[in-house]
Amino acid sequence: MKIEQRAAVYPGSFDPVTRGHLDIIMRGSRLFDKLVVAVLENPEKTPVLAERERVDLIARAVEGNPRVEVRSFRGLVARLAAELGAGWILRGLRSEADLAAEMPMAISNRLAGGRTVETVFLPTRPELSFISSRLVRDIARHGGDLAPFVTPPVAKSLRKALRGGGAPS
Ligand code: ADP
Image (cartoon, rainbow, N blue to C red; front, side, top):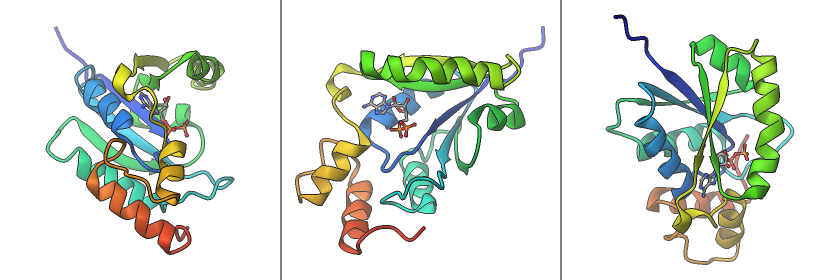
């Protein structure tokens, strides 16, 4: 029997990557042979951290996990999945509000991807369910303790970017 490689894409803005995201990456990497973390370059949004930095911070955090790869992308996640030969899109769920927002995306990604890509949801760990990138950015702007939410390198980069008045795009 030939066992095919099962690859998934985990897309997001990751501005910045949080302990909640890292938990989904770690757990997701056990479900698939390859998990590609895909950092969205969205021309309509101005991120705090530049795309290169968001990619590097995730890469540093997942170093040593051979199943995880990190890259940036633009455009449709369904197209990226097709290009990579990935059959799944991985997303994390923190709440019913997340689910409501995720459902139309999951359905349209399936339709836009020629029905070859399925979305898989992983529930957050309860102790990480309150963490969002937006909350982390707000806490960083007001000088709060970031340790419960992000790794030390992420906290450092975020503070630096905010001191400098934002990321170069
Ligand atoms: P987006 O900009 O697409 O909302 P994010 O970078 O905020 O992307 O998040 C990417 C994915 O990670 C989403 O599926 C989101 O629901 C999930 N996620 C974010 N924070 C957490 C968390 N604390 N626990 C579990 N999943 C999370």
